[in-house]
Amino acid sequence: MDMNVSLNGLELKNPVMTASGTFGFGLEFAPYGDLEQLGGLVAKGISLKPREGNPMPRIAETPCGMLNAIGIQNPGVEDFVTKALPALKNRDVAVLANLYACDAEEFGELAAVLADEDGIAALEVNVSCPNVKEGGIAFGQDPAQITRVTEAVKKKAPGKHVMVKLSPNVTDIAVCAKAAAEGGADSLSLINTLSGMAVDVRKRAPRIANVIAGLSGPAIKPVALRCVYQAVQAVDIPVVGMGGIASAEDALEFILVGAHAVQVGTANFLRPDFAFGLAKEMESLLKSIGATSLEEFRGSLQLPL
Amino acid sequence: MSLRNCRIVKVLEVSPVGQSNSAGDFFELKLEYPDWDGWKPGQFVMIRPTNWELDMLWGRPFSICSADGTSLTLFIQSVGRGTSRIAKLVPGDEVTVWGPLGNNLAVEPDTPTLLLAGGIGIAPFCGYVEQHSAPENLKLFLAHRLPLECYPYEALCGKVDGQSMIDRKPEDLKAIIATLKDLIREYAEQDGLILCCGPTPFMKTVQTFANEFGARAQVSLENRMACGVGACLGCVTKDGEGHHVQVCTRGPVFWTDKVEL
Ligand SMILES: Cc1cc2nc3c(=O)[nH]c(=O)nc-3n(C[C@H](O)[C@H](O)[C@H](O)COP(=O)(O)OP(=O)(O)OC[C@H]3O[C@@H](n4cnc5c(N)ncnc54)[C@H](O)[C@@H]3O)c2cc1C
Ligand SMILES: Cc1cc2nc3c(=O)[nH]c(=O)nc-3n(C[C@H](O)[C@H](O)[C@H](O)COP(=O)(O)O)c2cc1C
Ligand code: FES
Image (cartoon, rainbow over all chains, first blue to last red; front, side, top):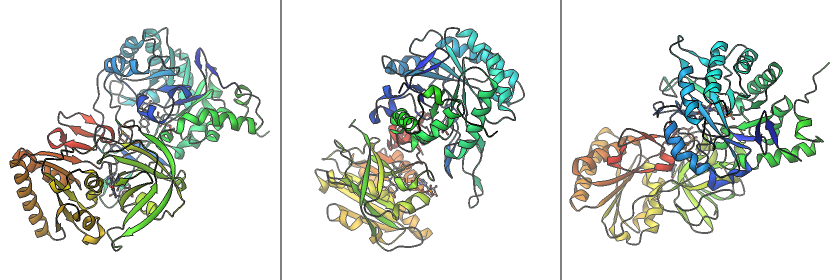
């Protein structure tokens, strides 16, 4: 079965990508499988300047999920371009950079650095930073800012495919999806983590130093599926679905509600070779349920009359 | 770096060690050998039983005690949800294993080497002693809360010089700290090597004395881990310059002058 996916100009040999922050810069997983078996690989979030990230503890396991508040620890974009990227070049896998900044200008600067890097197939824009200038509301919660940030990235990296990654921590995901499309996004990806918290009654303390953290893993899949479904209805650009995918069947659920491709995040921690075989498993499952192609199956959800 | 892999292997044996007690059970977990090319003492594995399904997502890290071509042995204390469920595995159950992971403990066969273990921190020293070419140069010190038979102490003492101290009452702790101080000073004076694994306060004490006497000492950290391969950045500690580094790939073993505990 043809598993190729065309995302508005971004060609993937299969619909499985690994999600930012859960797959390092890719090489961490090279001992466990062939990176070329992936449709795409989203590198960990990078910012203009290096960031040390949040204090420890940063992670906690929760029922069927986990919380993290890593705080975008990363070596900065220069280091990414000179060290991480060359090691990934010449491999037949689409490498996406994940951009993190705290205002539209900074996003533009970051995009400019990456605009001419031919080892990067696309830029994924993470709009989860609380924007201090605009009163501390995360970009991702303000449609006007989503549009502005998308425009800024698109302007500084006109030749690059720009995928805007949406946060589920909003009242109406459709409005945010439209805002990104209006800003010129070539595709959308969702969902980022759900805002959450865990505490210890014995220590009377939060389990994460940052107190508030992001929930991911199978626990969030129903929310993710609903968000992807609503985003697909709202815009004409392709949507990449993620949130709790831990099997081929989970992945196909996202395709069924209309996603073109998927990303695998927390499931990479179940076992480091998890993502490598997923596209093949999706293909077998599609055949066994009688789908004729990935494209035919996409968005074929039958709603009750 | 030796090659790593991820395999599903079967449980061969789960055997309790010592008596059960309220502070947690100790047991030895023997797994089918995951076909490694090799491993080094101080390295660890991540294991995740298949029957966890999606309830608990992360594997759990354990030091490699021995791995001999037919089996992989781990020594585990049951302290929480994951370890108590690992204790209930039975022969034939499937476990995903990835490793060997991390760096290793320093080996200098001809150097007098002091092994400082706090409780379950004795685990990495099982493999260390087994693979050492001159165990007569090794001395093991164990500080323990539970009866000595809960730990693989006697077996190690057959091969190396051993000393143990119980840690139950406040005055016990004082005595342990005084002994640690004397031992570390002694090994610093003869330019020996000191290796330490145990609870954080124990390792902090060792670090303080090692720095004070200029001893060459390593600590093996047991931070919480999700991926074990350097990707999630959930396990970090601060290096000598205050930068966050992954314990799973840059450690778990650090020189005491190059880590903030
Ligand atoms: C490199 C490395 C080697 C290790 N080697 C061994 C070993 O040989 N034998 C052994 O018994 N244990 C070892 N540990 C510790 C072991 O991984 C933890 O005890 C285990 O992950 C706890 O899981 P749990 O679900 O039972 O605990 P949880 O239910 O998650 O927690 C129970 C309690 O244990 C503490 N805890 C949780 N995870 C860890 C952790 N990773 N380290 C320390 N405390 C933790 C929690 O704070 C809590 O107080 C090692 C850890 C590391 C990182
Ligand atoms: C440890 C960790 C780190 C993450 N770091 C990033 C990041 O740097 N940038 C980003 O856009 N998303 C980040 N995410 C979010 C994931 O990419 C993904 O959107 C989310 O985890 C939901 O998918 P999942 O349930 O499959 O994990 C991170 C998630 C985890 C668990
Ligand atoms: S456990 Fe994931 S980076 Fe160390």
